[in-house]
Image 1 (spheres, rainbow, N blue to C red):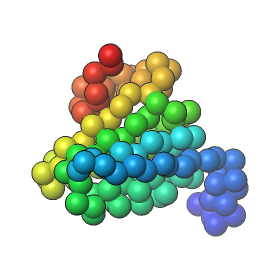
Image 2: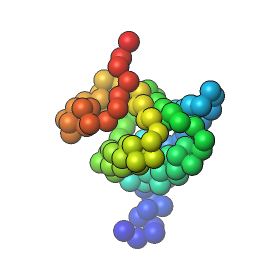
Image 3: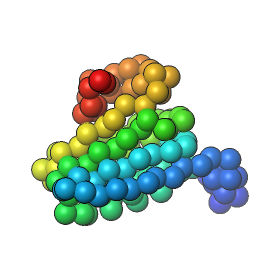
Length: 117
């Protein structure tokens, strides 16, 4: 993929994360689109969480608009890294439409999703 193509993708795709840390928990609220154009930024935030002293990492997908296969892969790999490091990962589910992506790929059973209230 050319640099121009990557730049064009980044212009039309937006992702941002808001982070809160308290009582040993690193909470990442994810907003926008998690896709090929934005996964590097997401991975950087996940790395910061894993490198922190927090024992529990919560990834909140409630405001995530969309996710593609690169975003799914990122979450799967991060889950494996958390398990290897002895960290607790909790994923707060997104919208019903977003959760259908996890169900269709059977990742809803593989990833540590928080139960809906």
